[in-house]
Image (cartoon, rainbow, N blue to C red):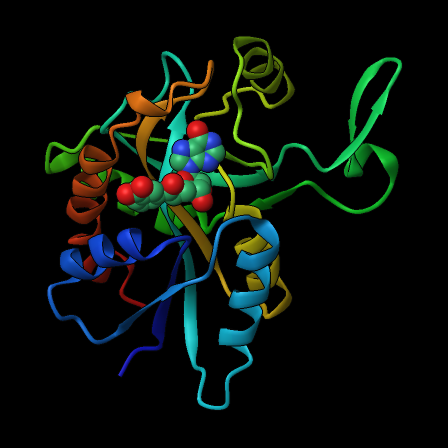
Length: 218
Ligand SMILES: O=C(O)c1cccc(C(=O)CC[C@H]2O[C@@H](n3cnc4c(=O)[nH]cnc43)[C@H](O)[C@@H]2O)c1
């Protein structure tokens, strides 16, 4: 039997959407990790360190904000990499990430072959899908100014969420490939919680999850 896939979501509703999409597939385990990069990293590390853990792939999955003109509401973003976009320092010249500060890296790459296979599979079944950088932030963006700053900081930024980099960091320490899959519920920009289309995004996440087992089988 092939090694198992571990999927981590932030909240129960996201887990339920992924589980519905998996249609009973038992080679995938879905866990609620909590909101934010610290909870996500801790939960991932705990799961990977479990006594009988034998995972060949770790996936951060859930809803996200989409950057304008890249990822519209209801579409899917498959991460090419997960970027800790606010991990660093403010300087008189602007933001300096931990990479610039000499403390490692702000980015963890997704498994490129699997990301490409999943993107193609989703597109070929008519699900609008973009593959690009997904930002991880501890604070949801609430202004157009911050959205512009982030888009300039990470060229090609497709989506922002709050867990991917934490999951990726834990997976990389265990030497296990990583992916992030996001269904877009809202636009990154001025805060308007009433405009979040969570139902639409969860339906898209469920549809995308029907592709997981076949495409990611190890
Ligand atoms: O209220 C609900 O029914 C509900 C159902 C599923 C998920 C939620 C969440 O609020 C999940 C929080 C989760 O969503 C990510 N997210 C979504 N949009 C953004 C954004 O614009 N910027 C950053 N993160 C976003 C994030 O990963 C949160 O953990 C509610």
